[in-house]
Image (cartoon, rainbow, N blue to C red; front, side, top):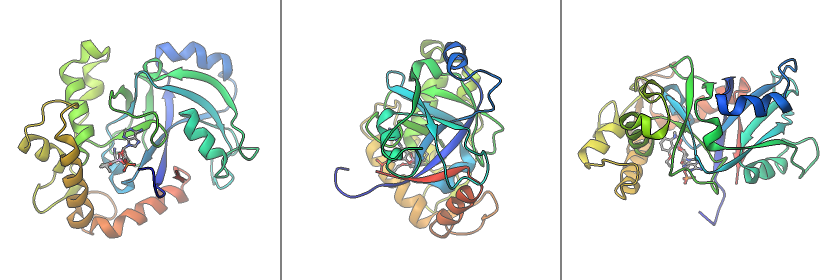
Length: 263
Ligand code: A2H
């Protein structure tokens, strides 16, 4: 961080149904008769894991905005697209060709993460038909779009967070079944098997998303998955993750389900 450029894939997770808390706010700025498509925009470094998405994380206290997205390269969706992300990310996007006027953001309304928890989304490529927006205390406002898509099979942070949410659903003000979607094996690694993140979390006795050991678990999972992992799900099943990463990314870009985002 700080130096160099991080090349993310920005995944467009389409809103199917807003949370109760956000419905009125959204209705005011986007009347239901407008044919707008709204997406939660999640920044990922692992596009090949998108088959395993089970939810979408926001920081409950983070401020997000609903921004107009001008996606000149979009093959579908015309110019009626809006995204939920941090203002910081929207500003960066406006310098990368995604705003009508270079360097200018078009914000319709502000929302906190807590407001949008429970929103139902379509997660591109996911084995699950729809996923919920859930709170993640460790989501950072200053990284990516502030929105994190959850792949518990391959991200120890994601696995530790959904495990915590399922355990204390009432405390977090969510429905337990939002946090208990099946964790699907998508990548096999030589040392940790078909569910690398859960295996690591268990082996390292990580019991909370605040556990400092997660930093090391994240490094191991990334190295194992990216350098030694093989796909065991989807159309590239049987091939090494290293080859498949760019293929899945391109597939998402070609179908306008994602676009490149750098910061
Ligand atoms: B990765 P780097 Cl399966 N706050 O995507 C906290 N975490 C964030 C974030 C934010 N604002 N924005 C992005 N991220 C996460 C998938 C994944 C990711 C897997 C395994 C490892 C992994 C599914 N979540 O990341 O600090 C996103 O999670 C470990 C490197 O910019 C993003 O990729 O290097 C990653 O952190 C970006 O982290």
